[in-house]
Image (cartoon, rainbow, N blue to C red):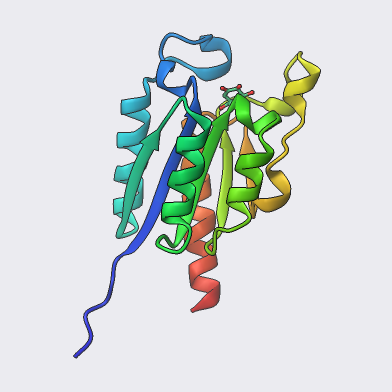
Length: 153
Ligand code: DQA
Protein backbone atom coordinates (compact mmCIF):
# COMPACT_ATOMS: atom_id res chain seq x y z
CA UNK A 1 0.00 0.00 0.00
CA UNK A 2 1.39 3.41 -0.89
CA UNK A 3 0.74 6.50 1.18
CA UNK A 4 0.13 9.58 -1.01
CA UNK A 5 2.57 12.38 -0.24
CA UNK A 6 1.04 15.82 0.23
CA UNK A 7 2.17 18.35 -2.34
CA UNK A 8 4.50 20.92 -0.83
CA UNK A 9 5.18 24.47 -1.96
CA UNK A 10 7.55 27.19 -0.77
CA UNK A 11 6.67 30.86 -0.33
CA UNK A 12 9.88 32.91 -0.41
CA UNK A 13 10.20 36.62 0.23
CA UNK A 14 13.26 38.78 -0.20
CA UNK A 15 14.60 42.06 0.96
CA UNK A 16 12.39 44.56 2.83
CA UNK A 17 9.26 42.43 2.60
CA UNK A 18 9.47 41.91 6.36
CA UNK A 19 8.53 45.60 6.51
CA UNK A 20 5.12 45.14 4.89
CA UNK A 21 2.57 47.11 6.85
CA UNK A 22 5.06 49.98 7.20
CA UNK A 23 5.81 50.32 3.49
CA UNK A 24 3.92 52.58 1.07
CA UNK A 25 0.31 51.34 1.25
CA UNK A 26 -0.39 52.72 -2.20
CA UNK A 27 1.84 50.02 -3.65
CA UNK A 28 1.87 47.29 -1.04
CA UNK A 29 -1.38 47.65 0.90
CA UNK A 30 -1.51 47.48 4.68
CA UNK A 31 -1.07 43.76 5.21
CA UNK A 32 1.87 42.57 7.32
CA UNK A 33 4.11 39.77 6.10
CA UNK A 34 2.95 37.35 8.80
CA UNK A 35 -0.68 37.89 7.79
CA UNK A 36 0.13 37.49 4.12
CA UNK A 37 2.00 34.25 4.83
CA UNK A 38 -0.90 32.91 6.93
CA UNK A 39 -3.37 33.67 4.15
CA UNK A 40 -1.24 31.92 1.54
CA UNK A 41 -0.64 28.91 3.84
CA UNK A 42 -4.43 28.68 4.40
CA UNK A 43 -5.14 28.95 0.67
CA UNK A 44 -2.58 26.20 -0.07
CA UNK A 45 -4.23 24.02 2.60
CA UNK A 46 -7.58 24.41 0.79
CA UNK A 47 -5.91 22.61 -2.11
CA UNK A 48 -4.45 20.04 0.30
CA UNK A 49 -0.94 21.42 -0.01
CA UNK A 50 1.66 22.22 2.63
CA UNK A 51 3.26 25.67 2.27
CA UNK A 52 6.64 26.51 3.85
CA UNK A 53 7.41 30.21 4.31
CA UNK A 54 10.71 32.08 4.45
CA UNK A 55 11.87 35.71 4.33
CA UNK A 56 15.34 37.18 4.47
CA UNK A 57 17.15 40.46 3.93
CA UNK A 58 20.36 38.60 2.98
CA UNK A 59 20.73 37.65 -0.65
CA UNK A 60 22.98 34.64 0.03
CA UNK A 61 20.44 33.25 2.49
CA UNK A 62 17.73 33.40 -0.16
CA UNK A 63 20.05 31.65 -2.63
CA UNK A 64 20.72 28.92 -0.06
CA UNK A 65 17.01 28.50 0.67
CA UNK A 66 16.32 28.12 -3.06
CA UNK A 67 19.07 25.46 -3.21
CA UNK A 68 17.55 23.68 -0.22
CA UNK A 69 14.11 23.57 -1.82
CA UNK A 70 15.08 23.13 -5.44
CA UNK A 71 14.36 19.41 -5.59
CA UNK A 72 12.07 19.20 -2.57
CA UNK A 73 9.02 21.24 -3.47
CA UNK A 74 6.26 20.88 -6.05
CA UNK A 75 6.11 24.63 -6.63
CA UNK A 76 7.92 27.77 -5.55
CA UNK A 77 6.30 31.19 -5.12
CA UNK A 78 8.85 33.94 -4.91
CA UNK A 79 8.75 37.69 -4.39
CA UNK A 80 12.40 38.72 -4.15
CA UNK A 81 11.63 42.43 -3.53
CA UNK A 82 14.22 44.76 -5.05
CA UNK A 83 16.52 41.82 -5.89
CA UNK A 84 14.03 41.11 -8.68
CA UNK A 85 15.58 43.93 -10.63
CA UNK A 86 19.29 43.12 -10.41
CA UNK A 87 20.14 39.81 -8.73
CA UNK A 88 21.70 37.46 -11.25
CA UNK A 89 22.57 35.25 -8.26
CA UNK A 90 18.88 34.68 -7.56
CA UNK A 91 18.24 34.21 -11.28
CA UNK A 92 20.88 31.47 -11.45
CA UNK A 93 19.58 29.77 -8.28
CA UNK A 94 16.00 29.74 -9.64
CA UNK A 95 17.26 28.17 -12.85
CA UNK A 96 18.08 25.08 -10.74
CA UNK A 97 14.57 24.64 -9.39
CA UNK A 98 12.93 21.53 -10.77
CA UNK A 99 9.30 22.48 -9.99
CA UNK A 100 7.36 25.42 -11.46
CA UNK A 101 8.49 28.82 -10.18
CA UNK A 102 5.95 31.62 -9.81
CA UNK A 103 7.15 35.21 -9.56
CA UNK A 104 4.72 37.37 -7.63
CA UNK A 105 4.76 41.11 -6.90
CA UNK A 106 2.22 42.96 -4.81
CA UNK A 107 2.57 46.13 -6.85
CA UNK A 108 2.29 46.61 -10.60
CA UNK A 109 6.05 46.74 -11.18
CA UNK A 110 5.65 47.39 -14.92
CA UNK A 111 3.65 50.52 -14.19
CA UNK A 112 5.80 51.99 -11.40
CA UNK A 113 7.50 55.35 -11.88
CA UNK A 114 11.09 54.17 -11.43
CA UNK A 115 12.44 52.76 -14.68
CA UNK A 116 14.71 50.22 -12.92
CA UNK A 117 11.68 48.68 -11.24
CA UNK A 118 9.99 47.87 -14.52
CA UNK A 119 12.50 45.16 -15.42
CA UNK A 120 12.81 41.77 -13.77
CA UNK A 121 16.01 39.77 -14.23
CA UNK A 122 14.31 36.60 -12.98
CA UNK A 123 11.20 36.44 -15.19
CA UNK A 124 12.87 34.31 -17.86
CA UNK A 125 13.50 31.53 -15.33
CA UNK A 126 9.99 31.73 -13.86
CA UNK A 127 7.01 29.90 -15.31
CA UNK A 128 4.58 32.72 -14.58
CA UNK A 129 4.79 36.34 -13.37
CA UNK A 130 1.89 37.98 -11.56
CA UNK A 131 2.05 41.58 -10.39
CA UNK A 132 -0.19 44.37 -9.24
CA UNK A 133 -2.84 42.18 -7.63
CA UNK A 134 -1.76 42.38 -4.01
CA UNK A 135 -2.31 39.23 -1.95
CA UNK A 136 -4.76 37.95 -4.56
CA UNK A 137 -1.78 37.56 -6.90
CA UNK A 138 -0.41 34.82 -4.62
CA UNK A 139 -3.78 33.04 -4.68
CA UNK A 140 -3.81 33.31 -8.45
CA UNK A 141 -0.35 31.70 -8.55
CA UNK A 142 -1.61 28.81 -6.43
CA UNK A 143 -4.61 28.33 -8.72
CA UNK A 144 -2.29 28.37 -11.74
CA UNK A 145 -0.15 25.69 -10.10
CA UNK A 146 -3.14 23.51 -9.23
CA UNK A 147 -4.38 23.78 -12.84
CA UNK A 148 -0.94 22.68 -13.99
CA UNK A 149 -0.98 19.66 -11.68
CA UNK A 150 -4.40 18.71 -13.13
CA UNK A 151 -3.11 19.05 -16.69
CA UNK A 152 -0.27 16.69 -15.83
CA UNK A 153 -2.71 14.23 -14.26
C1 DQA B 1 7.92 44.23 -4.99
C2 DQA B 1 8.30 45.27 -6.04
C3 DQA B 1 9.77 45.61 -5.96
O1 DQA B 1 10.09 46.59 -6.94
C4 DQA B 1 10.08 46.19 -4.60
O2 DQA B 1 11.47 46.45 -4.51
C5 DQA B 1 9.62 45.34 -3.49
C6 DQA B 1 8.34 44.66 -3.60
C7 DQA B 1 6.39 44.00 -4.97
O3 DQA B 1 5.97 43.04 -4.33
O4 DQA B 1 5.65 44.77 -5.57
O5 DQA B 1 10.25 45.25 -2.44
O6 DQA B 1 8.54 43.01 -5.32
